[in-house]
Image 1 (cartoon, helix red, strand yellow):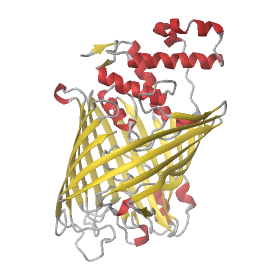
Image 2 (cartoon, helix red, strand yellow):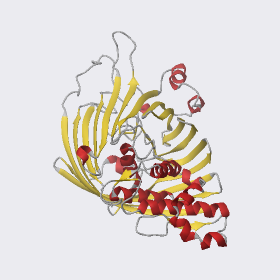
Image 3 (cartoon, rainbow, N blue to C red):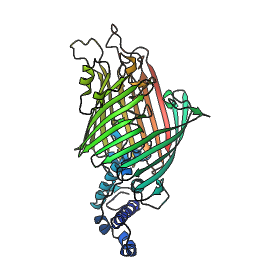
Image 4 (tube, one colour):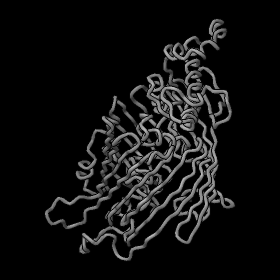
Length: 495
């Protein structure tokens, strides 16, 4: 049953009213006798409560949301539905960004433009409980407040995940326990730490780099981050992940193929414009670094555009690469053309409600000559995300095709390959391969989201540690040499 302006079970309405009452208490510092006596009256009077509100944002709400957090699936669903206006091309997103998007949902409710069923009501209510931490109910995974006073906040949240995967003749399972601690120290400083324990059968090479195994399990801290934030400017320092681009199974420039890096990044936000600068330590032993910047123009008439320029270099820290105003290609060319420059362009287009088209194009090397003496190194990605196809409630379908040419991510100087310990830090496919992915998800509840995934992979003989050599054919057939094909099936249940 669909409704407009009125919810089927009222859970979202309850959360909005609780949020507004909390704001009134913040205004008064301590609730006075009049407010406490008329609390029930205020709860029943939606209009009065909603129009007395003000926004208050703590520093801790600018902490990034871990990539495996349960909310991302729901945020992606409601963004494509056209209900939430939030940009998910760059991850992690912050709690503040989600809060602002939920404020807009409240406005849709007031204007009678919110069309949801009872399960979507429950999904939105779970987001309100997570990002407006004011509910005393305990039937969802609400973050637990460990300590709170006027200047300091500490919260904790834990989760368990299970995945079953069939990859050709091999099967594997993954079980993980994750707990996150976050909070703030005063108005401008916040922190986040995530501790993860992973148990995985047939673990791949990038599951164990830098992490020792103990009785079949591994433990690590993939996120340990400090944030200094002001209204339009912030600095993040520490360990985190970076996902740059709209791809759902990987991005061409930076994705989660390599689990985390230490570094510093700065962000400037001016209306629809977002400028990001990165300095990442890839490997401290080999003195290998990654610097870059991203320009993102957010959601103008349903279109979001992003442009990235990154460079990998080694054996020294290059001050010119740390300046976000410099064009990195010019800097590395003037220094002898020894470093590895990467460009990428990405877009997301909301064609209409319930459908999003997105893509990414990577340039590793581009030859200007009419008869190129060396290969062009390109990668491309194209995908679509559709919600409720054929009017099937809460069904979510995503399809994505990725193609990466031979010698992409390689470099003539081995120390500047786009990798760490021979693991590509870009797309999981690496060079000389393509693949198609399709995933079906059904939302039954915030923590019950069964998912079916099918993937097809082709992989040529190209390897990330085998760069092009002069004299060899610069334009081989795709995919090169002996091609290996793989079919992947996966079933998962989000808990």
